[in-house]
Image (cartoon, rainbow, N blue to C red; front, top):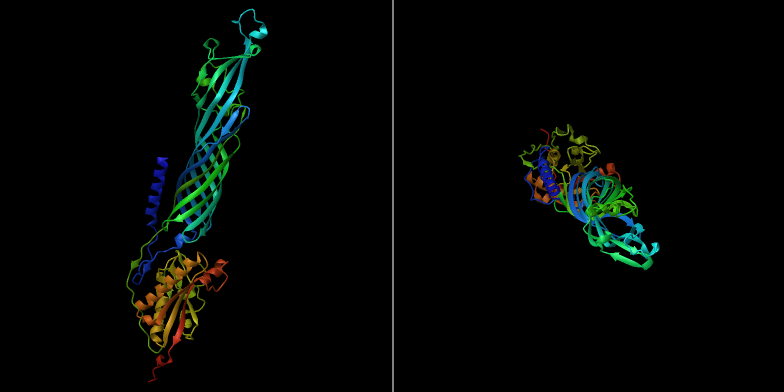
Length: 502
């Protein structure tokens, strides 16, 4: 068990080290905002690679049945340790494989007489008839309690599902097929006794503990049961995940596996082998006798543990940016919109998913043409990019925001503009509202740092409350993720005058 725990800890440390490497960090070209927690990992199901380790126990039972006239069978319990890997190819569905270590036990308590043989007592008085000298030998089981213990490795391969529940919880479920290999198996009597007994039916006489007749008492019998060592089964689990960090969850699990088939390998007639004079080998063990039916392994229990998500965490690089020059004559600045990162023009973005882990807001019109419209309340959608599930701006968004800066500087009559951020419906309402507010604030802070007067811009987050399209379709949902600039007020007295022709 210690080796399994050490291996799990080592894997998590290695995963965290690997997660710090990989693609270069996105460049952020403005002063960083005060740190704000990214709560998506806490309240939403996530795609990606996971490893987990948990430990617990429950009804890990060596299951079999015993005839009522012979004794009874009690449930057994044992320990469970699980280590595994899961890959979620969507926020809800995934596949996985694992290695489970279980200990099992089964307990039987026997109370019956096993007939051994019948013969004539040649030492009895010759005046007795043959019927009176007839005797019967039995192996008497007086509450003999046998405990069977096993340990096994199970390898489950299955399909798994997860769903967000509130701000920090996720519910998980799964089904699997499992191969089980038995590692150790043994039996031992832990209570009661077995002794040979002689009866004279004619006199209704029973004799115990008479060494001259080969009668004796036996306790502490043990051995290795002869049963099959591998089997297949089906399993399932229910789990509750509580997020400790964006990558680490604590988990509570209810899991179990039922093995198909029968592990019995022998069906001896008698539990006590009368022909064997060595007591410890004369006792065969319950699972090897015919009155024991359908030997199997069943485990249902609860575990607690940790689940770790592999994730890369690049740190932003702060670099300086120079604002494009303001162009006279009330003409919107012509800026270079070619984006070398994605090898395409920023104005060409359509409804599609951006590479490199960034999401975007769709724009169907050229940026400069949209900004020429200055009606109050007219929203202007702009493809502002952010790191996925973050309020950090992607470098590809600066060119477009600089165009907004130039527009505001050349149009002082726009005295109030709302920067409104919208999301789709992935995640909880509370999270989406918080994320949209932070993204709107990020854009406003960028505009202010580039020289726009703070009183002219206001940040508003609407979350998922104002969708443009049906959120049930991926392509439509992408359009709902957008940033809009809405002119709230115009002051005609501040409209720039055009220069007269020379």
